[in-house]
Length: 196
Image 1 (tube, helix red, strand yellow):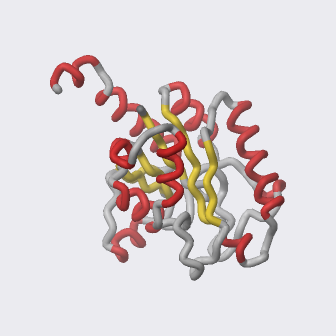
Image 2 (cartoon, one colour):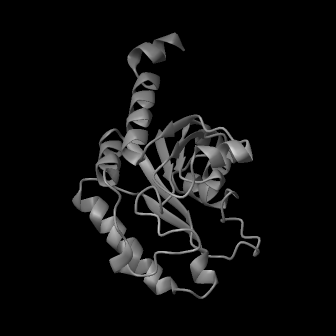
Image 3 (cartoon, helix red, strand yellow):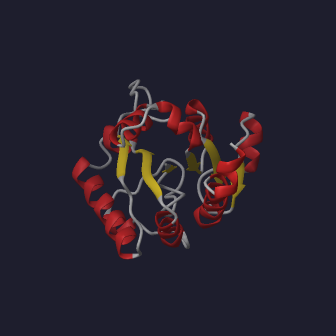
Protein backbone atom coordinates (compact mmCIF):
# COMPACT_ATOMS: atom_id res chain seq x y z
CA UNK A 1 0.00 0.00 0.00
CA UNK A 2 1.22 3.50 -0.90
CA UNK A 3 0.85 5.90 2.03
CA UNK A 4 1.64 9.61 2.36
CA UNK A 5 1.53 11.68 5.53
CA UNK A 6 1.38 15.42 4.89
CA UNK A 7 1.77 18.31 7.26
CA UNK A 8 -0.74 21.09 6.56
CA UNK A 9 0.51 24.68 7.06
CA UNK A 10 3.45 25.43 4.79
CA UNK A 11 2.90 22.24 2.80
CA UNK A 12 -0.70 22.31 1.57
CA UNK A 13 -1.59 25.90 2.44
CA UNK A 14 0.31 29.11 2.94
CA UNK A 15 2.26 29.22 6.20
CA UNK A 16 0.72 31.98 8.36
CA UNK A 17 4.03 33.06 9.90
CA UNK A 18 5.94 32.15 13.06
CA UNK A 19 3.69 32.25 16.12
CA UNK A 20 0.58 32.67 13.98
CA UNK A 21 -2.23 30.32 13.03
CA UNK A 22 -4.78 30.05 10.25
CA UNK A 23 -7.76 31.06 12.38
CA UNK A 24 -10.39 31.84 9.73
CA UNK A 25 -11.63 30.12 6.58
CA UNK A 26 -10.85 33.21 4.51
CA UNK A 27 -7.21 33.05 5.60
CA UNK A 28 -6.67 29.52 4.27
CA UNK A 29 -4.88 29.73 0.91
CA UNK A 30 -3.69 26.70 -1.03
CA UNK A 31 -0.04 26.92 -2.01
CA UNK A 32 0.65 26.86 -5.76
CA UNK A 33 0.82 23.27 -6.98
CA UNK A 34 -0.45 21.66 -3.77
CA UNK A 35 -3.84 20.68 -5.20
CA UNK A 36 -2.18 19.26 -8.30
CA UNK A 37 0.23 17.31 -6.07
CA UNK A 38 -2.55 15.75 -4.00
CA UNK A 39 -4.46 14.89 -7.17
CA UNK A 40 -1.37 13.23 -8.66
CA UNK A 41 -0.74 11.25 -5.48
CA UNK A 42 -4.37 10.15 -5.42
CA UNK A 43 -4.23 9.03 -9.04
CA UNK A 44 -1.00 7.18 -8.27
CA UNK A 45 -2.87 5.16 -5.63
CA UNK A 46 -1.59 6.82 -2.45
CA UNK A 47 -3.68 6.82 0.71
CA UNK A 48 -3.17 10.34 2.03
CA UNK A 49 -3.35 11.54 5.62
CA UNK A 50 -2.86 15.06 6.97
CA UNK A 51 -1.09 15.27 10.34
CA UNK A 52 -0.89 18.72 11.89
CA UNK A 53 -0.28 20.45 15.22
CA UNK A 54 -2.87 23.17 15.82
CA UNK A 55 -2.07 24.38 19.33
CA UNK A 56 -3.94 27.63 18.68
CA UNK A 57 -7.09 25.80 19.76
CA UNK A 58 -5.52 24.70 23.04
CA UNK A 59 -4.31 28.26 23.61
CA UNK A 60 -7.81 29.64 23.05
CA UNK A 61 -6.81 31.61 19.94
CA UNK A 62 -9.49 29.94 17.82
CA UNK A 63 -12.13 27.28 18.34
CA UNK A 64 -12.50 23.66 17.29
CA UNK A 65 -15.48 24.75 15.21
CA UNK A 66 -13.31 27.24 13.30
CA UNK A 67 -10.75 24.50 12.75
CA UNK A 68 -13.50 22.20 11.45
CA UNK A 69 -14.65 24.85 8.96
CA UNK A 70 -11.09 25.43 7.75
CA UNK A 71 -10.65 21.66 7.34
CA UNK A 72 -13.88 21.43 5.34
CA UNK A 73 -12.62 24.14 2.98
CA UNK A 74 -9.38 22.21 2.48
CA UNK A 75 -11.12 18.87 1.88
CA UNK A 76 -13.64 20.36 -0.56
CA UNK A 77 -10.89 22.13 -2.47
CA UNK A 78 -8.86 18.92 -2.70
CA UNK A 79 -11.91 16.95 -3.85
CA UNK A 80 -12.82 19.51 -6.52
CA UNK A 81 -9.27 19.25 -7.86
CA UNK A 82 -9.53 15.46 -8.15
CA UNK A 83 -7.65 14.50 -4.97
CA UNK A 84 -8.68 12.62 -1.86
CA UNK A 85 -7.50 12.90 1.73
CA UNK A 86 -8.37 9.81 3.75
CA UNK A 87 -8.35 11.46 7.17
CA UNK A 88 -7.08 14.59 8.92
CA UNK A 89 -5.46 14.21 12.34
CA UNK A 90 -4.87 17.26 14.53
CA UNK A 91 -3.31 17.73 17.90
CA UNK A 92 -4.96 20.83 19.36
CA UNK A 93 -3.01 20.55 22.61
CA UNK A 94 -0.46 23.08 23.80
CA UNK A 95 3.17 22.04 23.45
CA UNK A 96 3.49 21.49 27.21
CA UNK A 97 0.45 19.19 27.48
CA UNK A 98 2.28 15.93 26.71
CA UNK A 99 -0.19 14.96 23.99
CA UNK A 100 0.66 11.66 22.28
CA UNK A 101 -0.78 13.04 19.02
CA UNK A 102 1.34 16.18 18.97
CA UNK A 103 4.28 15.85 16.59
CA UNK A 104 7.01 14.63 16.92
CA UNK A 105 4.98 12.05 18.88
CA UNK A 106 3.44 9.45 16.60
CA UNK A 107 -0.04 8.89 18.03
CA UNK A 108 -1.70 10.20 14.87
CA UNK A 109 0.31 7.86 12.66
CA UNK A 110 -0.68 4.92 14.86
CA UNK A 111 -4.35 5.90 14.47
CA UNK A 112 -3.95 6.21 10.70
CA UNK A 113 -2.37 2.79 10.38
CA UNK A 114 -5.08 1.23 12.52
CA UNK A 115 -7.74 2.89 10.36
CA UNK A 116 -6.45 1.14 7.25
CA UNK A 117 -5.84 -2.16 9.02
CA UNK A 118 -2.05 -1.98 8.98
CA UNK A 119 0.52 -2.23 11.75
CA UNK A 120 3.37 0.19 12.28
CA UNK A 121 5.73 -1.87 10.13
CA UNK A 122 3.80 -0.66 7.08
CA UNK A 123 4.56 2.95 8.06
CA UNK A 124 8.21 2.30 7.23
CA UNK A 125 7.23 2.22 3.55
CA UNK A 126 5.29 5.48 3.83
CA UNK A 127 6.39 9.06 3.14
CA UNK A 128 6.17 11.96 5.57
CA UNK A 129 6.24 15.45 4.03
CA UNK A 130 6.73 18.53 6.15
CA UNK A 131 8.23 21.99 6.37
CA UNK A 132 9.73 21.80 9.86
CA UNK A 133 12.37 19.89 11.80
CA UNK A 134 9.53 18.51 13.93
CA UNK A 135 7.85 17.01 10.85
CA UNK A 136 11.02 15.28 9.76
CA UNK A 137 11.59 14.01 13.29
CA UNK A 138 8.05 12.61 13.33
CA UNK A 139 8.63 10.69 10.13
CA UNK A 140 11.95 9.38 11.37
CA UNK A 141 10.36 8.27 14.63
CA UNK A 142 8.38 5.64 12.71
CA UNK A 143 10.90 4.99 9.94
CA UNK A 144 9.07 6.82 7.13
CA UNK A 145 10.89 8.21 4.13
CA UNK A 146 11.00 11.94 4.86
CA UNK A 147 10.73 14.87 2.46
CA UNK A 148 11.45 18.39 3.69
CA UNK A 149 9.77 21.13 1.65
CA UNK A 150 11.04 24.69 1.42
CA UNK A 151 7.57 26.25 1.04
CA UNK A 152 6.88 26.87 4.72
CA UNK A 153 8.45 27.68 8.06
CA UNK A 154 11.98 26.28 7.99
CA UNK A 155 14.95 26.19 5.64
CA UNK A 156 18.12 24.19 5.00
CA UNK A 157 20.02 26.20 7.63
CA UNK A 158 17.55 25.13 10.31
CA UNK A 159 18.02 21.49 9.35
CA UNK A 160 21.79 21.87 9.68
CA UNK A 161 21.45 23.60 13.05
CA UNK A 162 19.31 20.78 14.41
CA UNK A 163 21.50 18.14 12.72
CA UNK A 164 18.54 16.38 11.17
CA UNK A 165 18.76 14.96 7.67
CA UNK A 166 15.62 14.25 5.63
CA UNK A 167 15.74 11.65 2.88
CA UNK A 168 14.85 14.31 0.31
CA UNK A 169 14.52 18.09 0.07
CA UNK A 170 11.99 19.58 -2.37
CA UNK A 171 10.87 23.09 -3.19
CA UNK A 172 7.21 22.34 -2.50
CA UNK A 173 4.58 19.61 -2.31
CA UNK A 174 4.34 19.30 -6.08
CA UNK A 175 8.06 18.58 -6.34
CA UNK A 176 7.75 16.19 -3.38
CA UNK A 177 4.87 14.36 -5.07
CA UNK A 178 7.03 13.69 -8.10
CA UNK A 179 9.68 12.12 -5.84
CA UNK A 180 7.04 9.97 -4.15
CA UNK A 181 5.38 8.84 -7.36
CA UNK A 182 8.69 7.97 -8.97
CA UNK A 183 9.86 6.05 -5.91
CA UNK A 184 6.65 4.08 -5.55
CA UNK A 185 6.50 3.25 -9.25
CA UNK A 186 9.96 1.71 -9.10
CA UNK A 187 9.14 -0.15 -5.89
CA UNK A 188 5.88 -1.59 -7.20
CA UNK A 189 7.03 -2.29 -10.74
CA UNK A 190 7.03 -5.90 -12.04
CA UNK A 191 10.83 -5.78 -12.30
CA UNK A 192 11.16 -4.74 -8.67
CA UNK A 193 8.87 -7.57 -7.59
CA UNK A 194 10.89 -10.09 -9.60
CA UNK A 195 14.11 -8.91 -7.92
CA UNK A 196 12.56 -9.80 -4.58
